[in-house]
Length: 68
Image 1 (cartoon, helix red, strand yellow):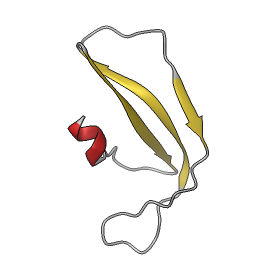
Image 2 (cartoon, one colour):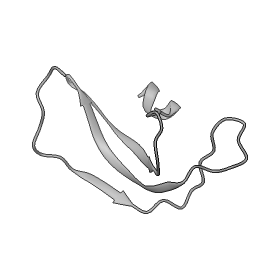
Image 3 (cartoon, one colour):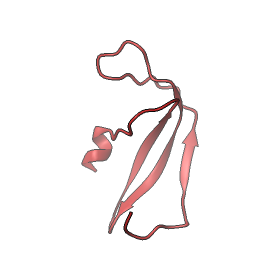
Image 4 (cartoon, one colour):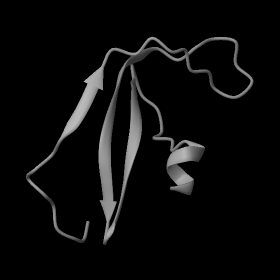
């Protein structure tokens, strides 16, 4: 990946209590927790929420994060 990486990583994490569902699924995903982190690209930075799930899966970006 291009660009510079910062060694100054700051995030706030906590156990997740919310239930997340795949589209049209009755079974919730098994979540391990969530964290908030500042994501920066060039000169633009936004705070984004990341949810960590158990097992394998593709990374997803929520609507709010995508539009920011």
